Image (cartoon, rainbow, N blue to C red; front, side, top):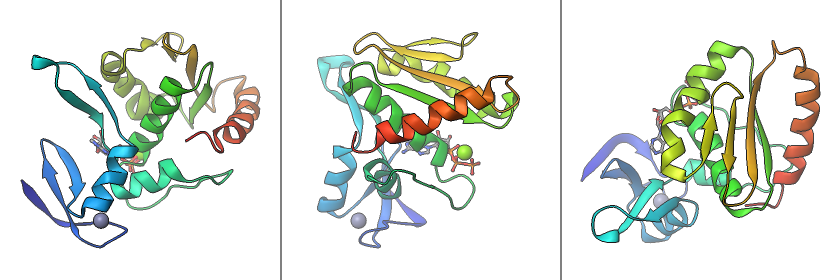
Length: 173
Ligand SMILES: Nc1ncnc2c1ncn2[C@@H]1O[C@H](COP(=O)(O)OP(=O)(O)OP(=O)(O)O)[C@@H](O)[C@H]1O
Ligand SMILES: [Mg+2]
Ligand SMILES: [Zn+2]
């Protein structure tokens, strides 16, 4: 167990601790909320529980927020993009025919921030990633994540779709 020198829980201000590459708050009530917003599977050796994603307390706040439009900003690197993508995976695994759109300004940004990660994460969540189509499909529920960038000729159409998705996400935690 490693105590993070700087990162503290946004709820109780306790320092986060690392166990098996997951950052937990040491306060039981906080770690319970982290688990509630995480994603895991039964599998691996012995069929035990394996976490695929455990959000930090700040990432839980993002996932749990019921506002119509959520702005998640802050310092570089604490996991905004990761939290956004896994929040969508959680919804896609639970909500039949859920539709989501991930947009970045340019294709290179989209590729490094999300597409490369989705390729790695595909087997972890039992989804089907097709890089040429920039989609992640969830056969379990019929849900679909589409990715695009604002240099796309139909970026405007996608932006309109985004507004309807933001509306759908409200209350879908
Ligand atoms: N809850 C988590 N569990 C495991 N890894 C995480 C978690 N949150 C973030 N990471 C990892 O931390 C790194 C930084 O995350 P990410 O790229 O999402 O940060 P960011 O806030 O979007 O950064 P930037 O400001 O550069 O856009 C990535 O390697 C990501 O996989
Ligand atoms: Mg980012
Ligand atoms: Zn805490």
